[in-house]
Image 1: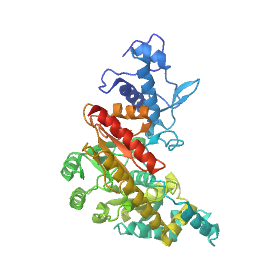
Image 2: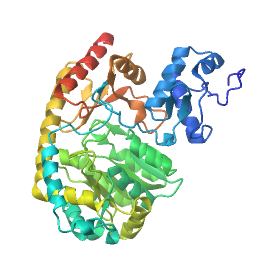
Image 3: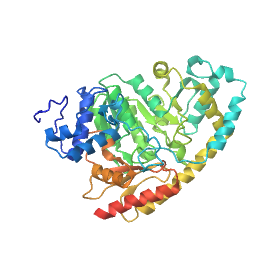
Image 4: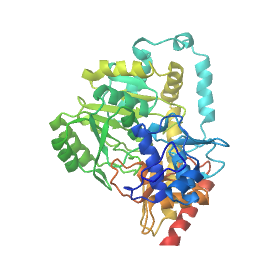
Length: 461
């Protein structure tokens, strides 16, 4: 630990960290937030004084603070300094204020900006004339209107999961549904298994609930069932949380054979599964969900925001019957219920067929953007993505490191997400980045950004 001649309120310990110095400093900020050494609202030391104290270049400290800001750990106020954010423990990035106007953003995992206003406007007009508007403005018995639960159960059924209104909950998006599932199954200190690379949302939810995440080894097809079995034999596990369909961040699609093996392993050990299938509507042919193979153990999540529009923050959760009452209590605890007005709009889109029209257009745009990505990286042998996925996984050649590559692209005006944001185990050293193709506001922006990434790759190949 460095001396503290300026009496700074906080100093990081960088002695045991192996990452690039600016990354190590940003990591230290995040770790000390988790440990409680840095509280919400705390002011970080002035960059110049911290640089002098640690013997670092001022530019290194500036890059570290900028990276911590991007991670959502701190916020800067002109003339006042940098402060720890109140929601910093989630470590999840907020969307850019206007992601399509300043930089080419492949960082945020949004659906493509298809033409949807006219169809939604039509259904809003239908909603405004409904005879049930008064009922939709009231609290709902058992969290949701019966007709809405029927629509939700039918939506779950289209993916192969047998659900009834009495085993279906309507949540405020897939993350909320996952949070409800974790609350139902786990207590502080419990162990949850997930893919060895997983979304920041899952990591953040586990951190808030004080759960221990442990990674299951994966390959280019998804999780390796044998390693799942090994972990379940060694560990006392409360739940397994998987995204087997167009996995975030790698976009792998777990084959049916492995799904059957995973189901058999979970059934043998009696461990519940939380299966987040938020990307399933983007596929032309949906593989059998693992939850359909183990209905008494499977919490199955299907949502609307990735396939239709981000503002349709609705997800449908199929819960094993024996857990339904507890899950309903967790829904009440976290939000009481999902908006009946929003669900009525979504229900009208679904029953009219407009939802399928929007999904079809979303698929066509995704396929077009994924083809552009394959063409941009052809010959590199580095890019892997399912044609229907909103995102892809770009492995980096030597000597690139993920954080170095991410910063180089940022300086060129392109945003991508480094692999370290998704790693479950701190010891993982994966040099790759996730590219989200849906956010750029036009196909021209997509191709421009992909070309810039390809140019940077070629510089070092």
